[in-house]
Image (cartoon, rainbow, N blue to C red):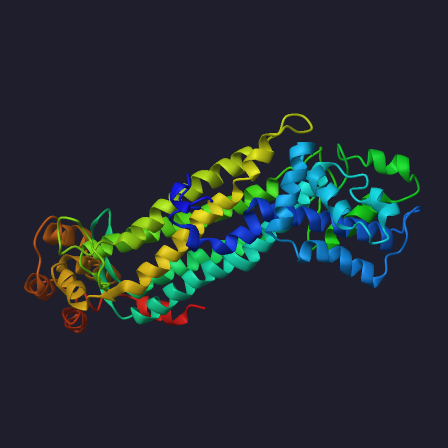
Length: 454
């Protein structure tokens, strides 16, 4: 029996338990099941909707029995299809033969040749992959990302008043709050999640080279383009009117590119939180028995954010290849898309591991308000910005240059700022107001922006 310790991929070894839910969408068995769904639903459609000459309208009981072929699909069924494939050396044909074999004794034997009727394998495959991708994104990927966003939003509100020094180019800059920095990421993620959900999942069902050649010869009077469009739309997909032998996979590229953007946002976030931890802005809750270093007992490493970043990189390398390669095919088609598509679940697997790691890491964070305050109090020079801006308001001469001379590359404290303000020439009320300003209070609308976010 196969042992996960011998798995070549960590997805089926070390990380196996973290992606179990994806096996029902992207595994070999799942692909077989989605193919069966398409084959069965097409057979039901041409019998009960198109009512092609030579078919018969199926009873409710027969429809139920047919759908039971995929509703009760299990590992035994999947293995039977693999056994058939050993003879056919063709995976889609093996599915067709499996359905016929399973439905023996149903009274439908004389109509079996309408299973896979006028279909090319790619009609079945592209529709199966479309259903697979739509189901996985709707039922697993988006809910998991929503969980990431929910945790970030919760902490954004928790940290909304936690003033902190910003850093641009790694140098002290205008203060913000930790909550505002978190809500920035929430907003970016929500926008890109919406982009994924807006992609129209498409399928073609138009025969060997996209022209309904065989369909028209067999039944010249049927409006095949219209009929097949209704079939695909009945599955909840958008119909592709024009194609070669294969669906062009442009919509897939849209999904993968959107996923890549989501993952890039999270890579950015993971690195920022990692930096906040290194600066002491966050401590991490310790787990009893957990070890941070084999040599240094004191260490509590930000391993969850590092794990997430690494797995997001793996996922994005694959998403990049998918979106660049899949829309390209030689002439009517070649087999390169087939072997690449079998790896789609791998990219989503690495993504799911990363999302779980980010959520886990967020759950360990403990904000260190004292460290944030100390950092702010060591950077009074950031008040050069508001002071010179107020001076501009009063049309004073060279305010920027004066503050630059006072602060650039120098150690500044509260006293330095106070003395400058006293001699600034500003109205007394403005001097008094600005002397009350501290780096900790200079956060603009940061708190309100978090509170108002919806």
